[in-house]
Length: 151
Length: 129
Image (cartoon, rainbow over all chains, first blue to last red; front, side, top):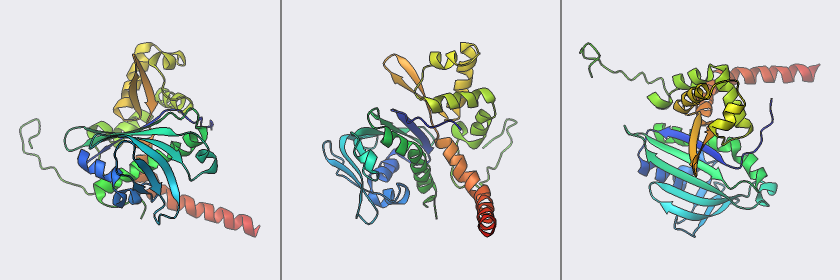
Protein backbone atom coordinates (compact mmCIF):
# COMPACT_ATOMS: atom_id res chain seq x y z
CA UNK A 1 0.00 0.00 0.00
CA UNK A 2 1.57 3.27 -1.06
CA UNK A 3 1.28 6.15 1.32
CA UNK A 4 -0.97 9.04 0.50
CA UNK A 5 0.90 12.18 -0.39
CA UNK A 6 -1.41 15.06 0.33
CA UNK A 7 -2.00 17.01 -2.86
CA UNK A 8 -1.77 20.80 -3.02
CA UNK A 9 -4.59 20.93 -5.58
CA UNK A 10 -7.44 18.48 -5.31
CA UNK A 11 -10.30 18.14 -7.79
CA UNK A 12 -13.59 16.35 -7.13
CA UNK A 13 -16.43 16.08 -9.59
CA UNK A 14 -19.88 14.53 -9.63
CA UNK A 15 -22.94 14.53 -11.91
CA UNK A 16 -26.23 15.12 -10.11
CA UNK A 17 -29.76 14.86 -11.46
CA UNK A 18 -30.83 18.29 -10.24
CA UNK A 19 -30.89 21.88 -11.49
CA UNK A 20 -28.00 24.30 -10.87
CA UNK A 21 -30.37 26.24 -8.57
CA UNK A 22 -30.99 23.11 -6.46
CA UNK A 23 -27.24 22.50 -6.25
CA UNK A 24 -26.71 26.10 -5.16
CA UNK A 25 -29.33 25.74 -2.42
CA UNK A 26 -27.79 22.47 -1.30
CA UNK A 27 -24.36 24.05 -0.78
CA UNK A 28 -25.57 27.31 0.77
CA UNK A 29 -28.57 26.39 2.95
CA UNK A 30 -27.87 24.86 6.38
CA UNK A 31 -31.02 22.70 6.24
CA UNK A 32 -29.26 20.82 3.41
CA UNK A 33 -25.63 21.02 4.53
CA UNK A 34 -26.41 19.36 7.87
CA UNK A 35 -27.55 16.28 5.92
CA UNK A 36 -24.37 15.56 3.96
CA UNK A 37 -21.52 17.85 5.15
CA UNK A 38 -20.51 15.93 8.28
CA UNK A 39 -23.56 17.46 9.95
CA UNK A 40 -22.19 20.99 9.45
CA UNK A 41 -24.35 24.08 9.61
CA UNK A 42 -22.90 26.38 6.93
CA UNK A 43 -23.41 29.99 7.93
CA UNK A 44 -22.78 32.85 5.51
CA UNK A 45 -24.55 35.68 3.68
CA UNK A 46 -22.61 34.61 0.56
CA UNK A 47 -21.48 38.12 -0.27
CA UNK A 48 -17.83 38.73 -1.18
CA UNK A 49 -15.87 39.48 1.99
CA UNK A 50 -18.50 37.91 4.28
CA UNK A 51 -17.46 35.16 6.69
CA UNK A 52 -18.02 31.56 5.59
CA UNK A 53 -18.39 29.49 8.74
CA UNK A 54 -19.15 25.83 9.38
CA UNK A 55 -20.58 24.85 12.77
CA UNK A 56 -21.29 21.50 14.33
CA UNK A 57 -25.00 20.64 14.04
CA UNK A 58 -25.71 21.98 17.55
CA UNK A 59 -23.57 25.09 16.82
CA UNK A 60 -21.44 24.40 19.89
CA UNK A 61 -18.23 23.92 17.93
CA UNK A 62 -16.80 25.69 14.90
CA UNK A 63 -15.47 23.28 12.23
CA UNK A 64 -14.59 25.60 9.38
CA UNK A 65 -13.47 29.20 9.20
CA UNK A 66 -13.27 31.14 5.94
CA UNK A 67 -14.32 34.11 3.88
CA UNK A 68 -16.38 34.40 0.68
CA UNK A 69 -14.14 35.43 -2.24
CA UNK A 70 -16.70 35.06 -5.03
CA UNK A 71 -20.38 34.12 -5.09
CA UNK A 72 -22.19 33.92 -8.43
CA UNK A 73 -25.43 32.02 -7.84
CA UNK A 74 -26.08 29.43 -9.13
CA UNK A 75 -22.72 28.94 -10.88
CA UNK A 76 -19.77 29.55 -8.64
CA UNK A 77 -18.82 29.89 -5.01
CA UNK A 78 -15.23 30.49 -3.91
CA UNK A 79 -14.22 30.73 -0.25
CA UNK A 80 -11.09 30.56 1.81
CA UNK A 81 -10.89 27.55 4.11
CA UNK A 82 -9.33 26.74 7.43
CA UNK A 83 -10.23 23.50 9.21
CA UNK A 84 -10.71 24.03 12.94
CA UNK A 85 -11.67 20.43 13.83
CA UNK A 86 -8.01 19.43 13.90
CA UNK A 87 -5.46 21.28 16.04
CA UNK A 88 -2.60 20.90 13.54
CA UNK A 89 -4.74 21.83 10.54
CA UNK A 90 -6.13 24.88 12.40
CA UNK A 91 -2.58 26.23 12.77
CA UNK A 92 -2.02 26.15 9.00
CA UNK A 93 -2.69 29.08 6.64
CA UNK A 94 -5.98 29.41 4.72
CA UNK A 95 -6.50 27.33 1.59
CA UNK A 96 -9.20 27.87 -1.04
CA UNK A 97 -12.34 25.95 -2.00
CA UNK A 98 -14.18 26.57 -5.30
CA UNK A 99 -17.58 25.07 -6.08
CA UNK A 100 -18.30 25.14 -9.81
CA UNK A 101 -21.81 24.31 -11.03
CA UNK A 102 -22.41 23.66 -14.75
CA UNK A 103 -25.51 22.31 -16.54
CA UNK A 104 -24.59 19.04 -18.29
CA UNK A 105 -27.84 18.62 -20.26
CA UNK A 106 -30.85 16.38 -19.75
CA UNK A 107 -31.63 17.72 -16.27
CA UNK A 108 -28.16 16.80 -15.07
CA UNK A 109 -25.73 19.22 -13.43
CA UNK A 110 -22.01 18.79 -13.00
CA UNK A 111 -20.58 19.88 -9.69
CA UNK A 112 -16.82 20.30 -9.37
CA UNK A 113 -15.08 21.10 -6.11
CA UNK A 114 -11.51 22.34 -6.38
CA UNK A 115 -9.62 22.56 -3.11
CA UNK A 116 -6.31 24.30 -3.81
CA UNK A 117 -3.68 26.63 -2.34
CA UNK A 118 -2.88 23.76 0.02
CA UNK A 119 0.91 24.01 -0.49
CA UNK A 120 1.45 25.40 3.00
CA UNK A 121 -1.34 23.34 4.57
CA UNK A 122 -0.29 19.67 4.28
CA UNK A 123 -2.29 18.56 7.31
CA UNK A 124 -5.46 20.11 5.90
CA UNK A 125 -4.71 18.55 2.49
CA UNK A 126 -4.41 15.13 4.10
CA UNK A 127 -7.54 15.71 6.18
CA UNK A 128 -9.85 16.69 3.33
CA UNK A 129 -8.56 14.13 0.79
CA UNK A 130 -11.10 11.43 1.64
CA UNK A 131 -13.67 13.85 2.98
CA UNK A 132 -14.72 15.56 -0.25
CA UNK A 133 -15.62 12.23 -1.92
CA UNK A 134 -17.85 11.39 1.03
CA UNK A 135 -19.43 14.86 0.99
CA UNK A 136 -20.15 14.83 -2.76
CA UNK A 137 -21.49 11.27 -2.70
CA UNK A 138 -23.82 12.28 0.15
CA UNK A 139 -24.88 15.48 -1.64
CA UNK A 140 -25.76 13.51 -4.80
CA UNK A 141 -27.75 10.94 -2.82
CA UNK A 142 -29.58 13.64 -0.88
CA UNK A 143 -30.62 15.59 -4.00
CA UNK A 144 -31.61 12.50 -5.98
CA UNK A 145 -33.39 10.49 -3.32
CA UNK A 146 -34.30 13.11 -0.72
CA UNK A 147 -32.53 11.04 1.91
CA UNK A 148 -29.13 11.33 3.56
CA UNK A 149 -26.51 8.72 2.67
CA UNK A 150 -26.27 7.22 6.11
CA UNK A 151 -29.54 6.29 7.75
CA UNK B 1 -39.58 5.91 -27.73
CA UNK B 2 -38.64 3.86 -30.84
CA UNK B 3 -35.87 1.29 -31.21
CA UNK B 4 -33.66 0.93 -34.33
CA UNK B 5 -36.33 -1.08 -36.21
CA UNK B 6 -38.94 1.57 -35.47
CA UNK B 7 -40.79 -0.55 -32.88
CA UNK B 8 -42.12 1.21 -29.84
CA UNK B 9 -40.08 0.49 -26.76
CA UNK B 10 -41.36 1.00 -23.25
CA UNK B 11 -38.73 2.15 -20.86
CA UNK B 12 -39.27 0.70 -17.44
CA UNK B 13 -37.95 2.06 -14.24
CA UNK B 14 -36.45 -0.82 -12.36
CA UNK B 15 -36.30 1.07 -9.06
CA UNK B 16 -33.25 -0.96 -8.08
CA UNK B 17 -30.93 2.01 -8.08
CA UNK B 18 -30.35 4.21 -5.10
CA UNK B 19 -29.32 7.11 -7.27
CA UNK B 20 -29.43 8.03 -10.94
CA UNK B 21 -26.68 7.01 -13.34
CA UNK B 22 -25.90 8.59 -16.70
CA UNK B 23 -24.38 7.21 -19.87
CA UNK B 24 -21.24 9.25 -19.37
CA UNK B 25 -20.68 8.38 -15.75
CA UNK B 26 -22.44 5.14 -14.94
CA UNK B 27 -21.02 2.17 -13.05
CA UNK B 28 -20.36 0.19 -16.26
CA UNK B 29 -17.94 2.86 -17.45
CA UNK B 30 -16.18 2.95 -14.11
CA UNK B 31 -15.85 -0.84 -13.83
CA UNK B 32 -14.67 -1.08 -17.46
CA UNK B 33 -12.17 1.71 -16.95
CA UNK B 34 -10.80 -0.05 -13.86
CA UNK B 35 -10.63 -3.44 -15.60
CA UNK B 36 -7.28 -2.64 -17.18
CA UNK B 37 -3.86 -2.76 -15.52
CA UNK B 38 -2.46 0.22 -17.45
CA UNK B 39 -5.38 2.41 -16.45
CA UNK B 40 -5.12 1.33 -12.81
CA UNK B 41 -1.42 2.12 -13.02
CA UNK B 42 -2.23 5.61 -14.33
CA UNK B 43 -4.64 6.18 -11.42
CA UNK B 44 -1.96 5.04 -8.97
CA UNK B 45 0.51 7.48 -10.50
CA UNK B 46 -2.01 10.32 -10.09
CA UNK B 47 -2.75 9.16 -6.54
CA UNK B 48 0.94 9.56 -5.75
CA UNK B 49 1.15 12.95 -7.38
CA UNK B 50 -1.88 14.67 -8.84
CA UNK B 51 -2.28 17.28 -11.54
CA UNK B 52 0.13 15.87 -14.14
CA UNK B 53 0.56 16.56 -17.83
CA UNK B 54 0.32 13.91 -20.53
CA UNK B 55 4.08 14.18 -21.08
CA UNK B 56 4.81 13.45 -17.41
CA UNK B 57 2.47 10.45 -17.37
CA UNK B 58 3.85 9.16 -20.65
CA UNK B 59 7.37 9.19 -19.22
CA UNK B 60 6.34 6.64 -16.59
CA UNK B 61 4.80 4.16 -19.01
CA UNK B 62 6.35 2.07 -21.74
CA UNK B 63 3.74 3.10 -24.20
CA UNK B 64 3.26 5.51 -27.09
CA UNK B 65 1.84 8.94 -26.43
CA UNK B 66 -1.23 7.93 -28.41
CA UNK B 67 -1.72 4.83 -26.24
CA UNK B 68 -1.53 6.86 -23.02
CA UNK B 69 -3.98 9.40 -24.49
CA UNK B 70 -6.44 6.62 -25.30
CA UNK B 71 -6.31 5.25 -21.76
CA UNK B 72 -6.67 8.72 -20.25
CA UNK B 73 -9.69 9.30 -22.47
CA UNK B 74 -11.39 6.15 -21.09
CA UNK B 75 -10.62 7.28 -17.53
CA UNK B 76 -11.99 10.74 -18.32
CA UNK B 77 -15.19 9.32 -19.84
CA UNK B 78 -15.71 7.31 -16.65
CA UNK B 79 -15.22 10.47 -14.58
CA UNK B 80 -12.15 8.99 -12.86
CA UNK B 81 -9.85 11.61 -14.33
CA UNK B 82 -10.73 15.29 -14.60
CA UNK B 83 -8.63 17.70 -16.67
CA UNK B 84 -8.06 21.35 -15.85
CA UNK B 85 -6.13 23.98 -17.77
CA UNK B 86 -3.31 25.83 -16.13
CA UNK B 87 -2.18 28.44 -18.62
CA UNK B 88 -1.26 26.48 -21.74
CA UNK B 89 -0.88 23.11 -20.04
CA UNK B 90 -3.59 20.55 -19.50
CA UNK B 91 -3.34 18.87 -16.12
CA UNK B 92 -4.87 15.51 -15.23
CA UNK B 93 -6.41 15.03 -11.80
CA UNK B 94 -7.63 11.85 -10.16
CA UNK B 95 -11.32 12.17 -9.26
CA UNK B 96 -12.08 9.58 -6.57
CA UNK B 97 -15.83 10.37 -6.37
CA UNK B 98 -16.99 7.62 -8.83
CA UNK B 99 -15.11 5.06 -6.71
CA UNK B 100 -16.77 6.45 -3.61
CA UNK B 101 -20.18 6.14 -5.32
CA UNK B 102 -19.44 2.49 -6.13
CA UNK B 103 -18.36 1.99 -2.54
CA UNK B 104 -21.58 3.52 -1.23
CA UNK B 105 -23.74 1.65 -3.79
CA UNK B 106 -22.06 -1.79 -3.73
CA UNK B 107 -19.58 -2.29 -0.93
CA UNK B 108 -21.71 -0.85 1.86
CA UNK B 109 -24.72 -2.88 0.76
CA UNK B 110 -23.08 -6.28 0.25
CA UNK B 111 -19.78 -6.46 1.99
CA UNK B 112 -19.88 -4.39 5.13
CA UNK B 113 -22.29 -6.47 7.29
CA UNK B 114 -20.24 -9.61 6.49
CA UNK B 115 -16.91 -7.91 6.97
CA UNK B 116 -18.19 -6.48 10.24
CA UNK B 117 -19.41 -9.94 11.33
CA UNK B 118 -16.00 -11.45 10.56
CA UNK B 119 -14.23 -8.64 12.36
CA UNK B 120 -16.45 -9.20 15.41
CA UNK B 121 -15.76 -12.93 15.30
CA UNK B 122 -12.02 -12.31 15.07
CA UNK B 123 -12.13 -9.96 18.07
CA UNK B 124 -14.19 -12.45 20.08
CA UNK B 125 -11.88 -15.39 19.30
CA UNK B 126 -8.76 -13.40 20.03
CA UNK B 127 -10.14 -12.08 23.29
CA UNK B 128 -11.19 -15.52 24.53
CA UNK B 129 -7.85 -17.05 23.50
